[in-house]
Length: 99
Image 1 (tube, rainbow, N blue to C red):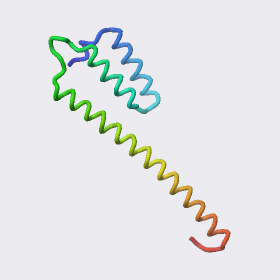
Image 2: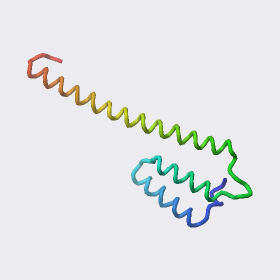
Image 3: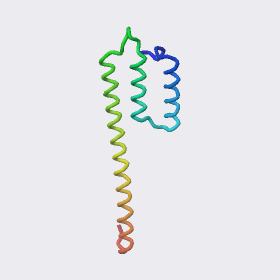
Image 4: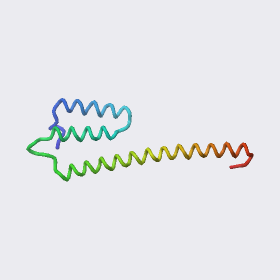
């Protein structure tokens, strides 16, 4: 489906969504789903989105969502390890043990 098939209202909506995400440098799951719903709502009824293309987009969403969750988990793990490292260093310095 081409972008030109979108109405001017949805194009303005998509533009404001992408400009707000560009400024924050992140693309959330909600943004992805919003774009997918906009595409489905504004597709040409005589030339609908191919089923395999729609499935590819849904798989892309699932993959993106899983990668985002993995990134969050790794960030939390990194913070925990960093905190643990500073705690161990603090204890080692109090006990006068070189770490």
